[in-house]
Length: 109
Image (cartoon, rainbow, N blue to C red):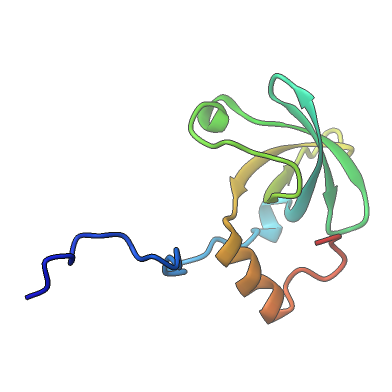
């Protein structure tokens, strides 16, 4: 038995696992963070070519760190479609998988 079985993989390739897709019936859509506005506010370029002002809800605020050019899922507000909430953030290997499958059409990634 090798003595380094508990070491992390040197290449940093994590398994993809199950991926979360946007739920169309709940007004969710893919988006790319274009600008951080401070506090919990940011601007996101959505898949439908609309830049929305979004916020990070308290559930994600301290648990998930979001940077520019991150792929996220935005839940559009039904009463004000120019704004939304960020509900999910994807990692690099997950973004590559979506790109290979062609799910990120219309995004500036």
